[in-house]
Image (tube, rainbow, N blue to C red; front, side, top):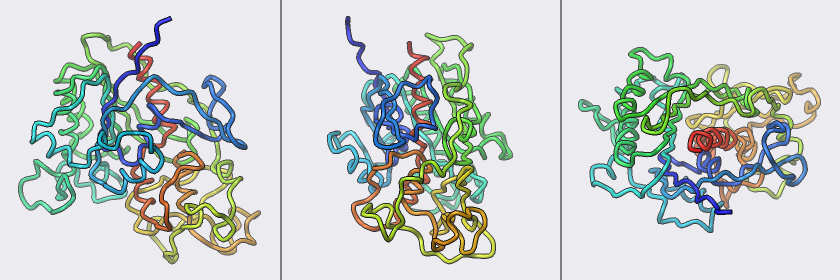
Length: 362
């Protein structure tokens, strides 16, 4: 029997590899996060490894050098030359020669569309490389980087592309979702988008994301469905935390580190997570105000009332995003990883997207 060659994937805005892991990595999640229809094998304790899908990521791109470093702490066998840290805007201007691929994936910058930000959208005054502010010409702003994504699709002509962004893309004035979809349709793709609420797919946080999928018209019709695999499976965040020791007890560097920011009266990050429910959305721009693991004298998680007040650790934030329980976020004590974790696509969501893409390619 002839072995099918893996589908080649080009990854944009790759970060520490959340979406990429879903396509060609080892996704390891709590057993209660996946239904029986997903083939898996047992790992340590209550965690399971999902079956690898038939993809190979052959090109990655992100401007954050630190994110690349984290990725290769976890993937030392991969070729670092395939991870390019120059802005995709600049690569396109230089007529960069991309590899031949089947799929393009990526979560283009979301800060300018998020409910948590200033919502400047296409009028963002941040440049594509985040180095300067823009006063007049907004054509190379962070908010228009989706156009670079569109241009890469135009050049590489993938069979399928996947773009991920925040739910705020659907609620902003000016219909940005319609504009973005029209730009992709002009390239000859059947395009659909889906509003995904992560708790409905086994991911233990109230994250809501827009997934845009395009299939080239030459080999498809418009009858394909949205993500359905694993829908209806729920898993509370307490399950992911059961095996963890407290920061002063553990030898896990990522579990030792947590923000010491004081509690404020109002604003983001002042709430305590509920172990028997879903964690809040992990944000990239929390500026230290990541949510509390527990408050002093709290009655929300009564079984932990004897433990000290603190915010979420880096490890806990990673587990909320369904990164593997042993994923290396740093080899030293630093809070920088909070940003990378918040920026990431949850690997379990990446896996469910990849599973859908594999169906579309067959």
